[in-house]
Length: 329
Image 1 (tube, rainbow, N blue to C red):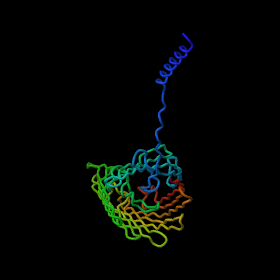
Image 2: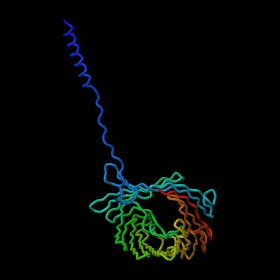
Image 3: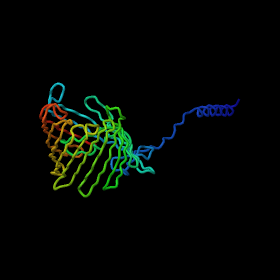
């Protein structure tokens, strides 16, 4: 065998081995393009597109630390003050459909007593709210921290017609009851706004207790602030209102500066616990916006009652209040 034949044979063998190794080699896949989170401005600030969808998501909430005071032994140990901290998250998802905007909400609360719970989860579309949320009695109180005006978190379905300056709605709610009937309640709402005046009326009926309750509220811009008036009446204790047969309340929120407001308020309760007992409460709430996302709120209230041992007070008078620091995001 000559040198030329040997070289050609070696080259052919090397080519065969190299080809076999190439067939077994792992080829790295081309990297797929990354989809970055896009800002969604169709539903206001704070929304972004969920990657791969046309649904916009917003995450908001707050962290709150608060010192509460109650002169009627606030804690089991007999202290009249107690510090509390909690975190709150709201997830809102929205997208456009042929029926209008489809929205859903989830509210989660966690606090320093190791309680974590669902504080609302519902769907909204075409004027309907369906799910677990606070009723209109909670939505429409006065702005301060002095009044008591009812409110419950229930599984409900409701419809609200929104004509801008006029709103009307109806709601069917699952309620807590002790009677022999189904635990169902119904509510109706009528609301109108003209200029700086906002008036509404809520009527509710508890089928379990077979009793009704009504709330009326009026707010109006007057001078440097807003005056608020509210009245409540119930035929007897029921799911919607069981504190007293009737009650009236008033407040005046004074916007002293862009960052500071103060709200004196008063409320009168007639026939507390639906007995021949009356009571009244006065108080003041003040708030200050320290900086963007950080605010403080404080309130102090005094309640005087004809007879001790009611739902409003163990004694014939009561002083309550709190000091709060809250970071919103």
